[in-house]
Length: 174
Image (cartoon, rainbow, N blue to C red; front, side, top):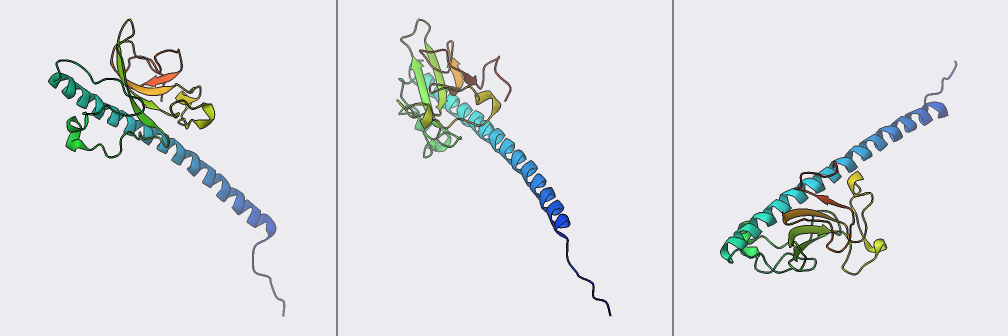
């Protein structure tokens, strides 16, 4: 009576493992891309919400926007945000990012914008947590994703640094 061995050969196991590995890498890339798009989508929605609150604030404060604040939304804006829901502020959608209200009234042409900053105030490049998206590849310490409220908005007031304008006519592809 002849006995046959049951089981897989080493080659068969290696082929199956390599196929599983390739499928896992494809799924991982898809999940990362979806996460990046979700962060940007959430950022756009929250920036729109803050902009709406700023417009309401301005209409009740003699046409004036709130003063500039670093790495936060302006005090007094809470009542204008739907339901006063400001418990998560100043945290922005991307891990390690925060909102920043920029009211640069001392410039030749004043600028009002809502920014999302990825570096701590006074930090250096090693402290930054930039998005993994292609449009953020060249981001620097003062780079930002921003919503232009009024004026010639830029990523940062004093420098020509890369940024991503959410509501500007010309912007890089997400």
